[in-house]
Length: 337
Image (tube, rainbow, N blue to C red; front, side, top):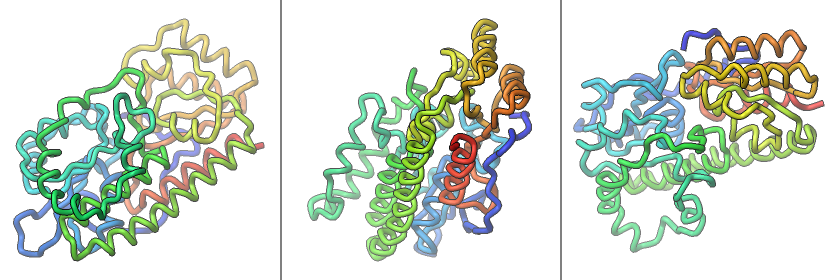
């Protein structure tokens, strides 16, 4: 992650301080009565802090854009932090695989795995099930604690990177609506007295997410399937929701994500697509890349094609909602006529 941010990078400058969201150690076992939440990244830590308010203490393990969750190696401090957690929020899908071995030593913590709510998650049905469930059901409430323990003990061997699946689900507003609902539900199970407050806060975020869906639908109408080149899978969901057409030659984005060299023929094909004049924008991951990505970005700039850089983590002082709003506005500015 040594590449400078691309043009139109989505760093938010809004001033919303999310106490406990970044780098504050969890204090499980303390007498303050707060629910201890550990999130793999500050994207999910931000959501937990917004939903839980002053009834939760939130620790985000990865908080800096200079850290790569794909390759992050957990420390002894991270292990201790998770051992104190009441609720763990992970992305899953191999994105934050460092969480999995840490969970092996955690007993009784509830776990929310975001990728399980993506519509295209292989073999997953949490998204569909969630639409039919009533979390307030009496039987479920009685079994909540036991279910959380079972969740903590099972299913954490299957989150290695899945070929062909885009694990960057935080850019999928529909999936994130369900993730927000699930975070509020789990917090309510852990702190029943705060359940109504958690639900109310979650509803506010969901309203914003529904607004983002409407904004993306507007782009879909206005941009009319405009062609884009995507150098890394990160913007895949947001591009798909906006109805854009990915014309990147097969193998380019996959190679960049895996940190391997792009085949010369694939790179040449990508440069030819950009030179064709039929590309509305180039969408990049502003935190990763290499020589091939830089060549593509430069070719786009030389051709007068906007380059939109997306980040995987929040900048300090930014909330998830602000970050998403910036992303959608930057995308709209690049592809709408």
